[in-house]
Amino acid sequence: MPAQIRAAFDAELRHARTATTSGQRWAALERAHILSQPWAWPHTRAHAVMFALAWSEHDRREAAGQVLRLLVAAPGSALGRYPEGNTGRATVPLTQPMPVPQDLAELLTHR
Image (cartoon, rainbow, N blue to C red):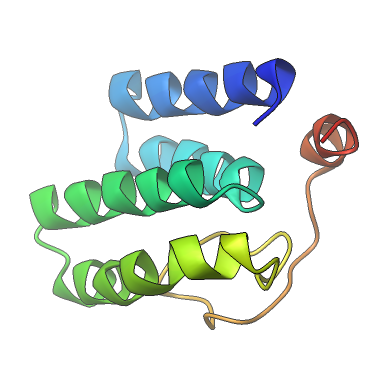
């Protein structure tokens, strides 16, 4: 993961830890997930943090969805088979591509 993208990924994870609302935490994790998709370890880490948040919020559906995503994140990234822009949440289909926010798209052009 290039340094510029790593810095943005880490910043989103920090924002998720310090956010004051669940919505803010999830929004930051979704952005971190989008940034992480091309790289197996960061992608898996994003899903692990999402699982931890779902668990802490007692959201069984989201936690179960994250377990499945933890299993496929690394292989998907390693094989280049991931749905670009997908937020990584259990509320969206596992293979559905989604629009990438413009600021993240600009960062990802440097990979």
